[in-house]
Amino acid sequence: MHSLAWLAKHRLQHLERREHDWVFWFDGNAHLTVNCLWRLLEAGQIKLTSQDDGHKFGLPAPVNVVSEVNQRLASASLEVVTVREGTLDIRLQFNTGHELEILPDSAGYEAWVASDGRKEFIACGGGRLEEC
Image (tube, rainbow, N blue to C red; front, side, top):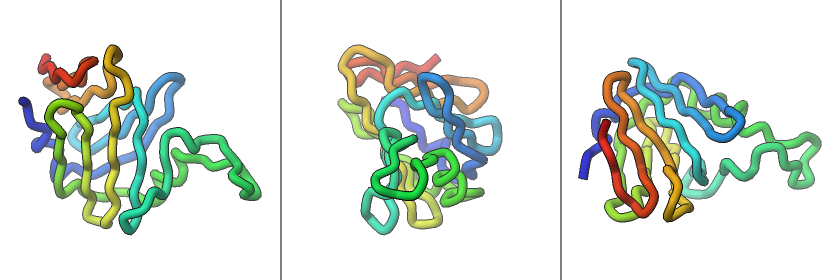
């Protein structure tokens, strides 16, 4: 199993929402492209998920997940990155106390791709991690 430990100590620059995925941009040209469910924990509780974007939940305006994440994690530094073997769930722990969990939700599709600018680490269907 390849490690994503190299991602630790990188600072989050911003989250970008694209048509079919989310990109977490870090300093040093590192990024994490996510094609599955992710959630942001604050004080151990779910604060936001990728599924919340655009929903009102009885609030005055729809939730803007990009804005919320960018505000909460502006320049936050990653302290610990763990990848669960077999499922390829990722847990990113930030110096702010926030945790970002990425939860692959398909046995067939690629769930996420992590890149350090030179190599890519691809979470393939069924929990197989490929390095390119």
